[in-house]
Length: 552
Image (cartoon, rainbow, N blue to C red; front, side, top):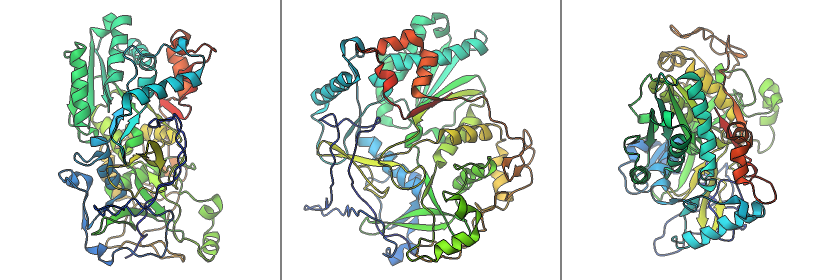
């Protein structure tokens, strides 16, 4: 068994809507290498390209296989282990001791009353003011790799952004449940608690009769942020309204069948993904493992898909109508023609695997937990549908850190744990359809359906990891076919029968995906939007975050 060699890189950066603010207001183009110098002799070993010939530690087959949950008690990143890509990302971001969100994040806070947009000539002047506040308030952050300050629309456009989203929730609540049921809002990953405070303040001032029946519950994975949320709720006198649970959402055991609204703002971008690549000879998917040697260097290994969650995520795709988002990331000619794939594989230096495909497995786990714990919910998601400077591959993430006052993005996910943010774009069309499919599926579908139907997501027992080469390799997994399964799930809530175009009878729920600006104009209205207009008549709230979408 063999795989790609260690890969880490720091490349140039550019301005992005969702970023820590550079001191200058714009991130300079920067190249950084060779950070291993110094007495500590840490081996960051940043490389700038992939290698298809270098070999990993030959002993990687003996390395212990671990998960992020098993590493949670560790105080230092592990060595001589291997894990799925999603576990590597989860450990890098959320480990309680060295994870990125445990020690390297500060959320930008605006003036307590928010910005008076009428005092700015235009959007550029507003951005200059934000940069000035950054310099005055956060210039004392420790230098070196890692420490970052995040902007979010909730903070930048306080309280108007939260009010627009909350008005959508209240309108639906009044239409469907008032006054027969309380207004119950769950927020997953609430950051500093700013959306909670602004939302409840809006309900209290504009809908006091609804506020009297409101319950606000936060499910927060970060212990440090949960403490901040509790303090701010207490200072606002909201202890009787707000309940905060410090737990990972996918492990949360609460819930009820009461009608409720679930809010996830910039949560999905930091949900870990798995990585698969497709064997060009058979189109069988192979799951990627990160192998960490004794020196802390990384290698990528590939093996037939065996992880149950990844198998379900690929299985849901397989059940949906065929679209570019649900097919392997190859050209239509290569997908359609085995002869074309053979001819391509015969070319000098041709890879035997497709480009990486980052599969949102934790997103699937999030939706399954939502279905199981809060079946009578309505979901509101706001996140980024595209990102610049992303790692190569379909839905590739942005991997970046702060160094010398500037943001520096990387060309690989294999970076020092805890020092880099790793965040993904959301394919909202795929999210909408996957959400509809999962919510229309019985819980038993998870356990019975995918294991009982042979398909390309089924791993062959005893298969070993493989290494991308310049020649085709035989695959242990069965070939990809558009209609690999045909029988219905056991006792489904409605007929579920895979066909060549997805599930027979598949119907999308009444779920809308809006651009950032369209949602705010629809539910905020001109009266609210006008409060974010600068003197030239443009709205900074509508003009920024052009790569964000909202699903409701």
